[in-house]
Amino acid sequence: MPHKAKESYFGGRQPHSEGNSLVNKQPPSELHHGVKILHDPIRNKGTAFTEAEREALKLSGLLPPRIHSMAEQELRVLGNIREKATDLDRYLYLIALQDRNENLFYRVVMNHIEEMMPILYTPTVGKACQEFQHIYRKPRGFYVSLNDRGRIRKILQNWPHKDARIIVVTDGERILGLGDLGADGMGIPIGKLSLYTACAGIHPTQCLPVMLDVGTDNERLLNDPLYNGIERHRERGDLYDELVEEFITAASEVFPGVLIQLEDFGNSNAFRFLKHYRDRTCLFNDDIQGTGAVAVAGLIASLRITGSKLLDQKLLFLGAGEAGIGIADVFVAALIEEGLTTEQARQRCWFVDSKGLVVTSRQDLAVHKLPYAHEHEGCEDFLAAVNTLKPTAILGLSGQPQTFTQDIIEAMASINDRPVIFALSNPTSMAECTAEQAYVFSDGRAVFASGSPFDPVTVGNQTFVPGQGNNAYIFPGVGLGVIASQSRTVTDEMFLAAAHSLANQVSDSDIGRGRIYPSLAQIREVSALIARDVAKMAYDNQLTDKEEPEDILADIRSYMYQPVYPHYA
Ligand code: NAD
Image (cartoon, rainbow, N blue to C red; front, top):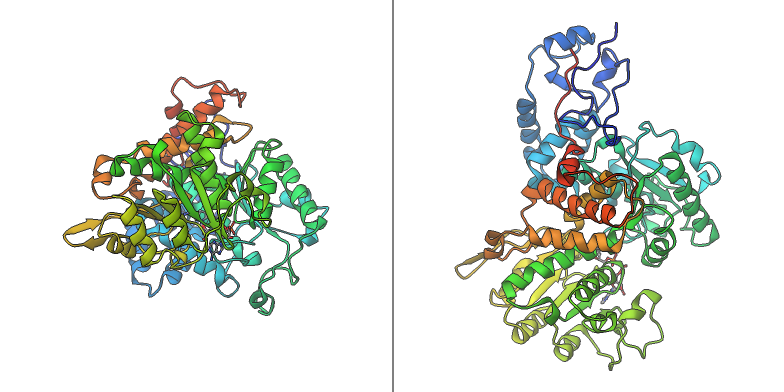
C-alpha cells in the first residue's frame, strides 16, 4: 500500500484555508517508492530518511545505515562548500545539491544567506553564465527557441509542476553587465528564482525559469561547439516579437494568473515590452522597476546620514539605460509624493550616457531618455557634468568599470559634506568604483552602495560596511506580495511602496556603520514586510478579487515555504 505523508508535502507550516490556493496542494496519492524518491529533489531526504521511512518506502539497503539529522547534513554541505578552491566550484556544488535535495539546499542557503548569495547570484552567477556551455551538467528551467514557434503552449505543458506562479524570463541579450550571452544567460532566471524561494519563501515548484533563445551575436559562443543555444545570429525582426507574444500568451494560459518577470533583455526591448504587456498581463521588469525601488530605498535611507531632505536631492547618473531610467522614474514618483510636479521632479535627475550629457539639443536620444533631456549645454565628460551640475548623488549604471575616478569622487566630496556614491553596475568587476576608492578618496565621507558585494573598509580608525544596492532586496518581496494577494497587475506604486518599506527597515545601527540597507541576514523578514505593503496596494486599489485578509502580514507569512523535510511514515 502506498504511504501518505503525515505532514505537508511542502514542509513547514502551510495554510489550509480555501483562499490560499497557492500552497495547499496535496501530495500525489502515490509516493514514488524506492530509488525514485532518492532522485526526486523535492522529496529526497538523503541520509535523513528514518528507519521507518526506509522500510515503508523500500529504501532499505539503498542508503548508508547511519541516519543523519538535517542539521548534520547541513554541516557536511558547509564543509564541502568551504573547501572548494573557487567560487565557481562552490556554485557547481550548490547547483548539484539543488538538483538532488532542494530542502537541504534551501536550508543551507537561507541559514547562510550572506555567504551563499554572492555564489548563487552576482558576482559568481555572471562567471557561471560566461562558462555555462562548459559547466553544463543537468537541465534546469525551460527553453523556448525560435524553432518552437507555433507550439509553445503545447511544450509548456511538459513542465512537470502544474502550479507555476512566477516565471523569470530572459532572452540573454544583456546578462548583468556582461552583454549578450545568448542561451547561456539561463543561469540568471535560475539564480533569481532561487532567491525568490530563499528570500521570500515562494515554493520551489512554483518557480519557472525560462530562456527565450532567439540566437546570439556573441561570436565567442557561436564559434564554440559546446554552446547550448541555437546556432544563429540574434533575430531582431518580426519573428522575435511574434515569439515573445506567443510565449507571454501561452504562459498566461497554461499557468493562469502567473506573474512574469522580464529579466536582462536588451534595453530597447525591455522598455517596449514593459509598456506593451504590463496592462495586459501580470508582469514587471526587474531591471527597470526593481532597480528603481532598491536605489530609491538607498537614497531615502541615506538622508539619515546626510541629514538632508529628499526634496533637496539632485541625482547625476552615469548610464541612461534600463536601470538608470528605472531609478529616475521611482525617484520622480517619490518626489511627486512630496509635492513636486512631474516636471519639477524630472529636473532633479540628470544623465550622462556613452555620448555625453543627455540634453534637449541632442538628436540621438532613445525615447526612454527624452523625459530626462534638459535644456543645457553639453558636457564633455562626467567630471565636467559633476562640476557644472553639482549633484548630491552620483549613480553608476553604465556597466563600465572604474569610471568613477579619483577626480570625480574628490569633486563630489568637495561639493557635498556627505557625497552619495552608488556604483551599481554588476558584477563586481564592472562596478564604477570600489568601496575602498569611494571611502578613501572622500576621506571617509562617502555614503556608498554597490550592486555586487564589497567587504568592509577601514579608513583611519573608522570601519565602513558598504550596503549592497541590489534588487534582491526588492523583487522577492514584491513577487510574494503580488502572488499572495492574487493581484492582476503590478503597478509603479507597488515599487515605490517597496522602496519605502525597505528604507524603513534600515536600523539605527546600520546607519551608524554607514550602511543604508538592512543586513542580508534579515532578508526573509524584509521581504515579508515589503510583500505586506505591496499586497495592501492590491487590496486598496481593487487589483484583486481576493478579499483582504484581517491580518495581511499573517496571510503573507502563511505562504512562505520553509525548508524542512516531510515525514513519510
Ligand atoms: P543598459 O544597456 O540598458 O544601459 C547601459 C547604459 O550605459 C546606456 O545608457 C549606455 O549608453 C550607458 N553607457 C555605456 N557606456 C558608457 C560610458 N562609457 N559612459 C557613460 N555611459 C555609458 O543596461 P542596464 O540594464 O541599465 O544596466 C546597466 C548596469 O547596471 C549593468 O552593469 C547592470 O548589471 C547594472 N544593474 C545593477 C542592478 C542592481 O541591482 N544593482 C540592477 C540592474 C542593473
